[in-house]
Structures are given as structure tokens and as C-alpha cells.
Length: 224
Ligand SMILES: [Cu+2]
Image (cartoon, rainbow, N blue to C red; front, side, top):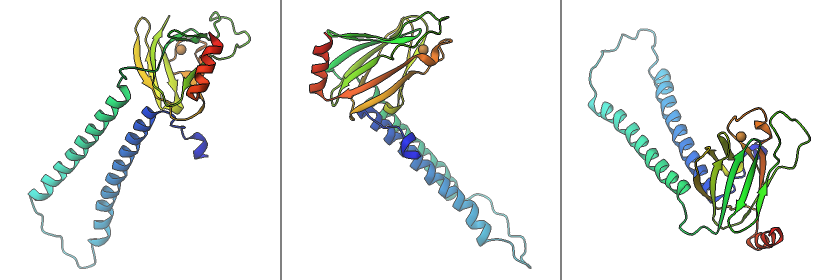
């Protein structure tokens, strides 16, 4: 069912990305409609009837040529501006984030280190051992507040991906990348490594649980 496979769109940033997607889809649908109409209408309206002579050819219709150059240019310029502004909002960093978490990917797990708070370590096992699987680590975030993620990788490159946040960011070994997440929906969302990083890549799962700010404080106190 569509509703089941449709991403939850659970952050302020993902709403911006979803609107961008819908703007592009609407523009594409509009272009498809116009093109199809321009193809199909003349086929029917000016189809050749018995006794019809070949029409006179004509050259240069400046109004038409300017039109078919200007309209696509305006469309592309509009979509470019829209994307540029959406990207600035998604990549924009708040001056004072409420929570800061250092997220580190490693073979084969994730560590979530809350600044001044708890550290959550995922399952860690040597690459060649396919033993019993430990529980995937859980990133807990407060609803309606800004969480700064400082993303890095300890060994090879990984990818931080939460489909319901419409968000994926490469975790590059030896480099820290920062982004903000403003969760807008309560719930638990699945996360995974999006970059093929080795044999146990598929085991690099985690989950993100969005709780109320009050529950978040209680959770933090319980961990520390
Ligand atoms: Cu990985």
C-alpha cells in the first residue's frame, strides 16, 4: 500500500524536501501535459483528409521561437531558485542547537555521544564473525527541538540514512560534517548505513526515537 511505503516525513527539514519534490513533480506533470497536448491535438485536428493538398511550408515564427526558449528557461530558473532556497534551509545550522550528538559510524555499528550526556554504543564485532546480533543502538531526540548531529566515521566511509527523515549524509572517515534535525513527529524511525562499507554493511542498523522534550530530559537523567 502506498500509505505504508510513503515516508513519514518526520522533521522540519524533511517537509522542506518533500515540498521541493512535489514542486518538481507538479512542474514535470505540467510539462508532460503541455507536450502531450501539443502532440495529440494537431494529430486529430489537422489530420489529412481525402483530397487535401500538401500545406505550404513556412519558415520562422519568432513569437513561437522566443516562447519555447523563454518558458523552459523561466521554468528551470524557478526550480533552481526553489531548490537553492530549500537546500539552504535543510543545510542551515541553528546558532544555538538544543542538543548536540556526535554520531560516529564504524564497522559495524554506530556510536551516539551526547555532548555532556550519555554515550550509546552499538554492537561491535569483528568483521569475520557472524555471531548473535546485539540490539541496534537507538538515537533519542526531543520533539520540536533542534538537534545538531556531528557526523564522522572511524574506519571507512559510511552513510547516515533515516528514510523517514528523507535524509542521507555520508559519514567520511577522518572528517566531521554537521547538520541539524528538527523532529516534528513522535515515533520510532528506522536508520541504516547507506554506503556499502564491507561484508556486514547490512547489519549497520539503528533507530531514531522521537520523544517529548520532557520525556527526553527524563531519559537523559536515567542514562547519566
Ligand atoms: Cu557502513
